[in-house]
Image 1 (cartoon, rainbow, N blue to C red):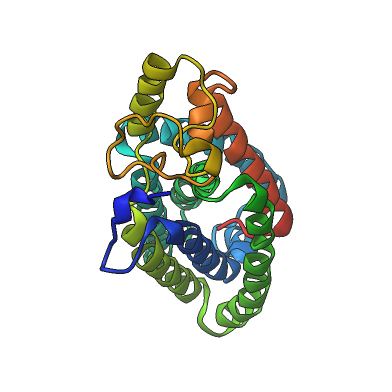
Image 2 (image 1 turned 45 degrees about the vertical axis):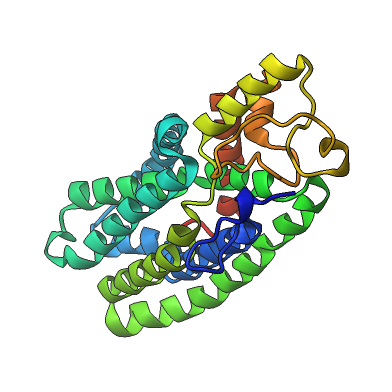
Length: 285
């Protein structure tokens, strides 16, 4: 199939490389998060003076914040684009991490630091479902399980960086550790998220393609995905940037559009599953 009609970024980055770049982004975020996320409760207790009960209340409120930001991210992705929202939210999340590093004079002010922390987590943890939907767009169904196993590599990197983070907290304090976390994650966005942003299909383009298929074919199957059975089917006109053109595998946005799943509900479900998974393995960050 034609992956985006051969469109390339920087002369060599193609749609076939999108899953690898998303893996690189996730790896950098895990490395950065591992240095600090384990120490946030200690930070709030030592520097902000939060009691154990208040800390538990904070972490009870946090999932609700993530849900709210996930709904916002999902809605924005319909018009902005999924990668555009991921990049924007990651930049905002990193900005709040950087703020936590630079606001040492406010560490005694628990209300301010908790607010910054909640905003940071809301921005950074709400795009997991969007990233998973892109993976599903650009990886054939039979290979998606293999991509999921790559998360174990990110988890290993998180564990290794947690050891380094512990030493940094002891030697240089929380501010330096938060700063290094922000720098590592910023590098991840610049190196791995920005280059593939022009290649990832906009959902409105996929919507138009599905509507065209409804008008032209009457029966919806797995169209324009690049498989042998699809090559003889009439092709709808799809913008060159769309992942439907030559896409190898079922597109979850296509599934949502045809009514098999509610678009907002599916994205929220993926984000909540992502949140549950990363909370379990400790790679939130």
